[in-house]
Structures are given as structure tokens and as C-alpha cells.
Image (cartoon, rainbow, N blue to C red; front, side, top):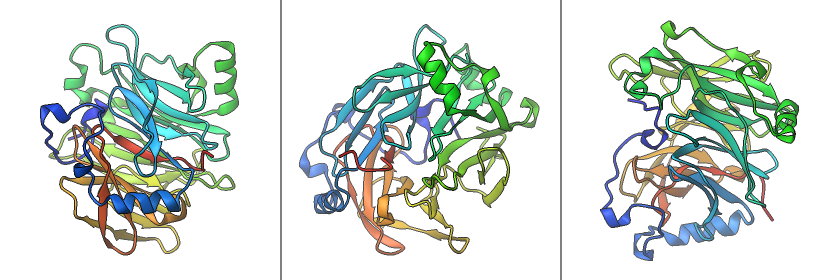
Length: 340
């Protein structure tokens, strides 16, 4: 079952004692394979990992050190993505008065300046900026899950996929105003009664060939009948291509040659094959992998609620993983370039 509440998205259960919950770092004894974390940090000098913990947005070094709070995310926040120049982290958040919708935000990772981007009054499901910096893609639900008991009946809604030129976004920010639905162009949509959800957006990192990955889910949140397929599409809505059936949460690797999925399988662009990675040596369900700069490492989540994160060196289809010593790492994402 999928949930509109971001903190409940994912698969599996990872139990934590009450005193482990929150954002505190835990003892070194809980960091599995610390040597691998150190090797990864040495290989990926200057790169950062951005993530949320349900309430706030953070970044940290590749080895998990120097965890830095970028901004308060509000009552709930998530759907973290980097801008192409690694100057901003984009995310969705519930902020403001009671029953406020999820809206789009970004935070400057250098100055910590927080900017509200949208004022839809409808839930933003995910967002991201194309690698050439020209286009923002954003998925928006046709309702507000924070109102009444809406979150208990998501079948009354759908989610559509839109784009907007970044020069429009920047002009709104400069003027102190916000995007509205009239600023957006739908590139994938369906009426509520069709029960399709277009979301889980991820841009590749090739500025010469911007390509967006997304999922199309039918009858969202109904376990018995629901299905989710992964697609790619161009910024203008052309070349809409089914990549794989029954795959969730596509994430482009930084080299744009692999598209990973929730179950740690991935699509290899060069030969159209789908391969599976298995990570050993860790406790808890492992999911949501993404390939590092250079493609030699995979970053992933461990567990569901009270998540951790981990990393593995991709030396084959079966590999041993390392675990970060933080509680509360949701949707960790590589910076597209070094920060220093």
C-alpha cells in the first residue's frame, strides 16, 4: 500500500527502540562496515548526500559525517531532489496553517535561504529540475490530503504530471510570488475516475539529452489490484516510453546510464536489460537504491518508518553493504557534482 504521507512510503518494517528515534547519531557499534564508508568517501571527495527525516532537510558527507541541517521542513516534508548545479535542494512540505497542502520549496545549500515555490492548495507529490536547468517537472495531486479524512480515501484523487519553464519559476521567486496551477503544462494526466497517478519523478543528469523518469500507478493505495509501471518522457511530453512494468520509484544514476528501482533492480540503458542487485550483511528491508557519480556505489534506504540508509560498492550482482549511523534518513540523494 502506498501512502500520501511521505514518512510511510517505502517497503518493509525496521523496528527501533524509543530512545533511538529522531535524528541523533548512534554509537559507532551500530555502523556496519565503517571501512566501506571511508573508502566511498575517499573515492567521492566533495560529493554530498541530501535527505529528509520527515520533518527537516539535511545533507551529509558520503561517509555520513558532517550531517548538516539545511532547513526546517515543517509538519511533514520529503521528495528531496538536487538542482543540476548542486546549489539548491528541492522538496515538498506541509507548512503553515492547519490543513495546509504539500507545496514545493527549495533551500540554498550554501546560505540556507528557504524559498516557497508553489501555492497550489493541492498536494505536490514530487518535483525536480532538468539537467540543463530549463525545466521543472512537478507532480500534483488533485486534492489536499491534509483536509478532513482525505488521506483515508486516496482513491477519490489522481496525480498529474506537469512541467514549467525555470525562467517562469525564477521570475516568480524574484517577484515574491508563487507558482499557481495556471502556470503549469500537463504532459501526463487523467481524470480522477480513471485512478491514475503520475509521480515519483527523477531527471537524468545529461544536459544534452534531458529525460524524466516517472511512475504511472493505477488504483493507487489498493493493494489487491494496484499496479505501478516505470516510464521515461522528454520535457515537452514526447517520447513517452514504458521502461518496465511492475517497477516503482525510478531513480537515474548520476552517469545517466542506469535507472534503478525500489527493489534494487535497475535498467541498463546500453542494452535495455533489467538486472538485480542483492545487498548482504545488513538488517532490515533494503530499497530505493541510486547509483553514485562514477556508478561504482549504490545508495539505499534500510527499513520503512525510522529509516536508516546504507551504501554498497557495486562489484557485481551480489555485494556487501555498509550502514550509516543515523536514524531518520529518508530518500537519500547524491549531489550531481562535488560541493568543493
